Length: 215
Image (tube, rainbow, N blue to C red; front, side):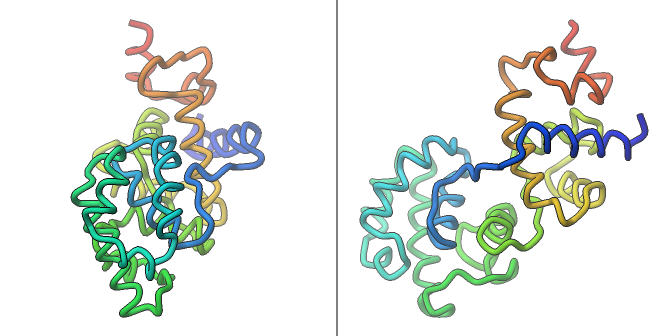
């Protein structure tokens, strides 16, 4: 298979498996999505979805969030890990949203990435899922599978994102990154992986991944 054929196979298979695509993190607007994505760093989406209702019951907008202390936020979000850094980030970015953006989440990568505790991946998720701007946030599943499918060299997430954007049509980025995440969780997990179940890797996987499995 040529690289273009592999790309087409990935797109078609994922479209078939995920004709409708659930968004992994529960949220109701750009602000609650931003906070949920920030909390998801080194934490499962399932855990984040258990914690955000508790946090958002107290503060689901920047004005209420800044009324809470960093310590109060930290106590609630502790189960998500990295709570000292995340609680400062949430409190700090809420202040900035009020002071600089009229309490609204800005709709640009530059402004989002200028917020405390918001990196490129978080900004990409918010831009794509809250505002519909084409982006390709690369999480561990996407990074792993792009390498496994021989579509990227796996050096780092920056390179993986560049390769994904080069290979896949821009109009499907927002759906595709979510489809790959769901596929990684359901069909090609890092642990307990079954090649029989993983049709994409079985069909187009790089030789080292397939040989490693056979051993």
